[in-house]
Image (cartoon, rainbow, N blue to C red; front, side, top):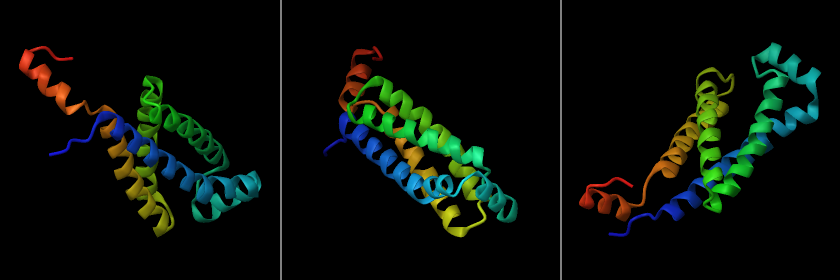
Length: 142
């Protein structure tokens, strides 16, 4: 049976983070940034969307997620750590969207994002199957 190697798992995690981040940027952040603070805050008051400072914070985290995805693709330790941190933040954000978003499509995207970001964290934290079994055979955890 073929096992998923750690480097392949990291590449899958990087692609998931990059795709979800680009979708989030194109669908949610860029249109809100283009419309400006007054329009976003008026819409937030009317239908319950996020205030403008949350849009800016989300955009900054999206840029950080793209950098983290690059580092994870390259199997750099800083990239893996950064992608875990960004994914943890995005899990909180996705859970809030799944519960409180005023639109059904945003709630569905929140649930799917939550599941995928939890998968990214799992892929980043898992160990190589062979090295784990060898550490149990020798009695020393690596």
